[in-house]
Length: 297
Image 1 (cartoon, rainbow, N blue to C red):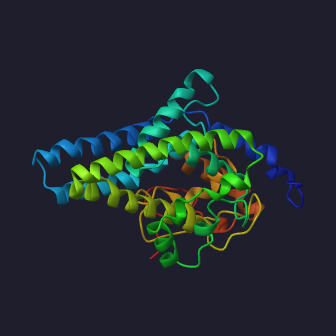
Image 2 (image 1 turned 180 degrees about the vertical axis):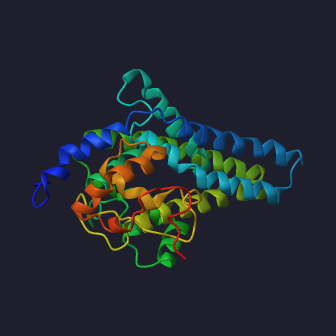
Image 3 (image 1 turned 45 degrees about the horizontal axis):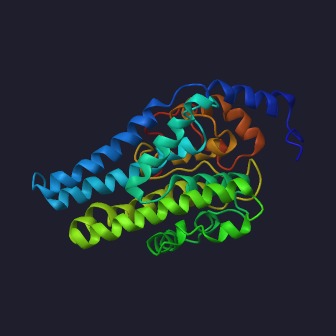
């Protein structure tokens, strides 16, 4: 694909990459704090509830909030945005990526390899692991897919990518973690059924629904196949700090190595490039991105 066709040299792909590179250097300490922090808070809920220091209903609310915060830090790890290509720091990606997902009861390796395929084949009906939710017809459909487990049922992609040895190896490793989670969940259900329901199983369902809506569904509504066409800028009634700034998710698809908290400044500088390339909704991006101008009532 000729990325420079019908676009002036002023907005060349090389210049776009040079701008993006400036925002892909900083260590993502905020994400590590959120990822490890929410998991530690969630773990602390168990003794607090068991010893009646806090009531179960408040533990459920806190656990649900933790579950909604758990995916994004792992998402940064999936792209290597902690290690930044340094082999000595790869352990940070693996540790943060795995530890933060305890709340969602899902293995890091499966999410990592399927997410990489989502980036490679965004909106491709057969090859995009997120297609069923990113191209859903309504919020109701997304809710049903999340609640019945369809949104995280990636087993068929093991067959689709049967010739990809790295995918197979990582997926198999993830399956072992998945089985371990199920065993732990089963034991806890037998010992503490109500606490397990309200501190882990139901919050995880809520967290998956939240993640699916804001990471998969809203950013891809009405988009197509193609680097500059598969993700959009959009507005929402929620302030962006409540939905993880997913209104800005399009720049992540263009330059995944830009850290999440550096995306606003990157988008401000990249806006002319995005408009020139025809990114859906780019004309509506504000010149300054703060914490509240992305709201649409």
